[in-house]
Length: 491
Image 1: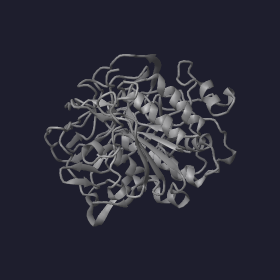
Image 2: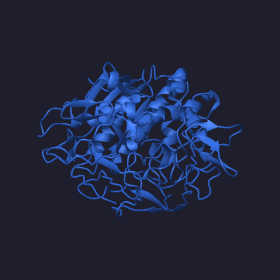
Image 3: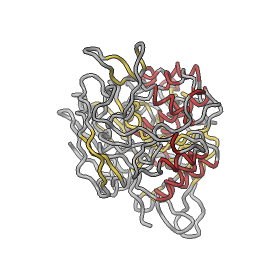
Image 4: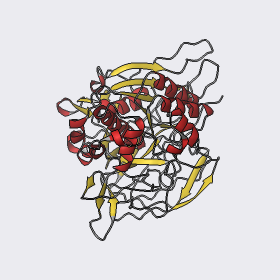
């Protein structure tokens, strides 16, 4: 099987600086480093109330599976945090042994950053030994390497049967993580549909695991495994609660939004690991959601996955509009007698993830089904399959996540037009150029597959997108560890 289309949903930003030139062996130059002390890289912790969340739960006793590329578990943030690390991919040649799941430098950058955002100790290489503080600092990380690069810099994951598909590698990793007892499975990757991923997701649901997945940074439809029914597909918001220019919009698969722009997540260059690099992308948002759910599960160890998910969905961030009547999505729930969001928005999903407030809810009386399951007859896995895998009758797992053109509660911050959903359509081919509206001086390098546009999944939902609000300052963005033959485009 040919190497898959794959993208890592991560870009690194350095405000006011030009992107470094590409060098041999990398997709683009290493990102310029910003000092954490002078950057907004930890703004999201205050916005989301992470310290408040951690007073209730820190991830203690919870296992988070990180499915990604190879990892460097020896960076300060992760020392003693990674309980196991396993490769799902063989080396070159039919009889080659499994590749090492460990690495240093650029090959390990993405996985290392994701794990640090989930469970980082806060110790690092920044000023004064400052590092990345994870949302669930006491969670146990189990790492699964499901993609590498071949001699031509293409994504690869050779299997024991002679195939070579990163999509299959991700599926094998999900199934293995479920069998290893993962409570949360975090996948900051996007790929193509593969039959094996559906079976793997059902295995995860049978194991009472919650699956969180990224979305592409190309403002187009979501991709697998995020499009899998019951998976929490996550998009990004900036510090104003708005969808950034690279964020996906108009997708029926979106579940939640979370901070994903200008977040301290670390990077490598020739001199080593730099904890204080500020980066952007849905990978970041995905890891933050995974960490937040791990913290919630540690606070409520007897709650099922479905009960935790009901608490999440029913308690997304919300506040009264500053002008006029009604409500708007926000990082926290602010106000009395706030309503429950009763329909998803194609730009934000159900809203911005708010674990600090959701953790305060007693989940013991909540339903045990997965409330993020979509009821469409073409969804995979089906409603029946998901319910059966969770040991529930199908009628208790009907889902209600279809986007609405008139959400009961606004899912857009003030000043951002509400997105209107169009009828769902099927689209098996590549899309057109990513729709992006940038400020007067913006440079965005998208992580694309095979030198072209990332292929969409089997299903997509088209819709008018909200106009993203961008800064008027110059922003240079560079890919970090993305798909082979990634290219930059000026928009």
